[in-house]
Image (cartoon, rainbow, N blue to C red; front, top):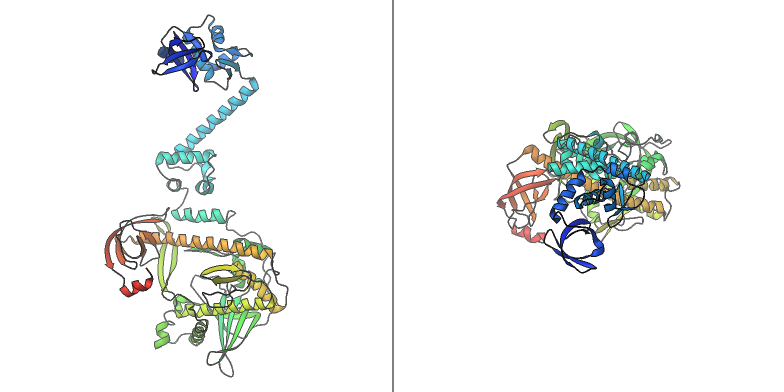
Length: 632
């Protein structure tokens, strides 16, 4: 005697070994012995064998038309054996009864279970809704399959193209397009960015990194909204100076300029002139809202996203050949370079020259200052400012710049196409702490310190940079900056590029003109601006570092050197000598920090921004005294 029963959601058949009235001892088709309550038995049968019953019933169930079964079934609850008898027109065989059971059980949309072996047909409205859901799922599965096949073949489905940023940077895995994309990634063995590059959805690896930054920080795009043109300051006195700026060749937001005017009794009147966009629009204006949201200009090799619209930058940048509104700090400097007095003013300043680093550095450097060199325009003024900067640095007791650190300049020629996409990168080295660096840095420190004290003495809040115990922080009250050796330091010298400086300029102008400060003491808005600026400025700086690293890899791929030289930082971490690229070399044997090594570049990844290199040889170990002084 055999029985059909249900266990763990599956139908099983077995041979009765012992019948104890209320329970049975049964051996299944797999040889497993189970104790079964008689109430759990669905069907008793003598033939065929349990194995044959299940196989034959499954085959017969597949031939049954479920829609026809639903139509001929009554509305009341029923048992499967009774329904099999009605359907067959005679007492069903064990196979016929089991086939009906399996078919009903496998169709929960058409038939609802009401107990062991008992069912009830689904009501018409519920069935229609369920069938519509099934059809929708079928169509969705077909859509996923179509998009998956397109992606595998290297074609971009238009449905997915519309979701490109989200698919790359914040995928919603409930969407059909993302399911298709992930399925295609499994089939091709490619990551999402690599697959989209293959399909042409991304023009280059550069787009992947740049667009991710835009997605996170500029979700509405980098275009500026409509705004009212800034007001042209009226009634400002015109300074009787000839001012000049000193900047990199790519600088368009020229914030600062200088002037040196001989005094009749000897000495000079030195002017530090800062562009004054704060005169063109007020707090609460549309332009203020734009600057408040962006908080800073974003810098990256070959591109930048300005804090203010180009029209505003053009109106207030200190461009040569015109009079520009500015906040000026004047120093009366004696012949011995001591400062006898100082004065701050809001005025129009004539800018007569925009000097550039690449023109000045060959003729104005440490060598020419000591040994002399060819004469050049602005030589006298620059020399005076250099001498004054040296005195100011000595007075602070702190160097303005790290004179052993190398700065790197990145220039991208977007008109040149390479195998990795548009853009040919050139990277130049420049030792920090040059006379030009020190000159500009010292005068900016003086201006930021002086105007920070001005706000503090007037009881007007500002945004300060403070340092104590080695930690730099932003604060709304004047506090010492130990690293610079000053009593307070309020960023005020870059109002075209940083919102903090723009805020401080509003406050400074209010003090100098007797107006009402834009921010009152203990202003919650001022504190909010401080917090937002710190977070945003750090994120922008991190993005700049990431893109510099990316372009270092592009530089490596452009030049394709067989071997490179690097300096060991610690353990297996090295820095290349020609470009500011730091990476790990797993094969590097134990080396002293500062050792120079030769490496073979074996590969690089522009999406993960990683380098694979192999150790070749040690070229030189550090000087023992230098190593001892390094603290390692």
